[in-house]
Image (cartoon, rainbow, N blue to C red; front, side, top):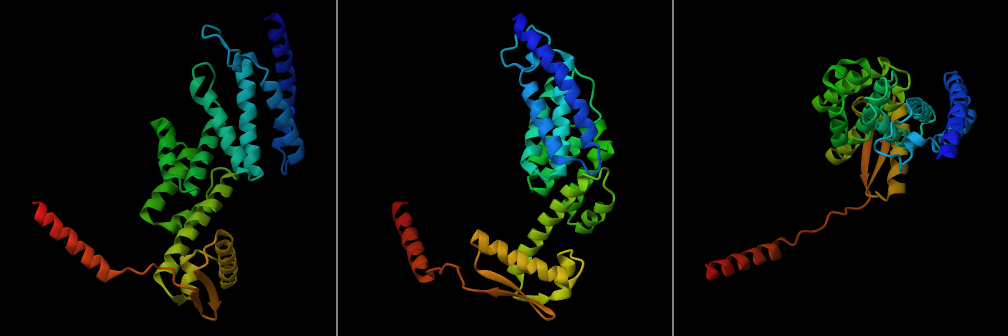
Length: 285
């Protein structure tokens, strides 16, 4: 209706003004997080009244490109803000909302200079969360020529290093990030790798030289190793993994087994049952 379009136009004008303020605030270092979050919330409310994004939009109706651009840019800055505040859930929501603009409206809108940096960060997020299947699915959506872009090439190279077991490559990559915000996800990735190495250590050894363990866990000092032991024990306690405790005793890192939870295998009973099954099968045949 005419009143709906009028309200949408008014909302668009307000959104353009607020978006300009959000851009200025987000680009400050450091940014005023409460102010940015408030602006983002107000923008999302205004965007919800855009007729171009209404579910009941007729198939033969052309969406307003300006509305789409404002909405896309709002969610892009929302993604950047969520990374700055380390809010992964909000980052994922913004990326999912941006899919509509990056793929469904790709022909209606000019390409965004923020698209590849955000997709690159999302790939890093999937990598650091050990969601390898989703990583490759997301990568398939990226055009072949765009995979040479530094924002996409960076997570792809890291994934290759992981597959090769070249963890030093991941550590070295912390100093060559294409965007400062990438560092957060690289730190998450290093943490994921460290957790995997830790699981292997405690299952492979009863004790190990502390310096060797430090190098394998990619820690800077024995003090960091001590902190990691405390954190690991606290995590195990919180998650109910109570069978192994890490104890840094002098030059040795000891994995203390508090109680053996391995189930006993009734071997004689198992052999007897297997022979009985074989005998019955022979009779049937």
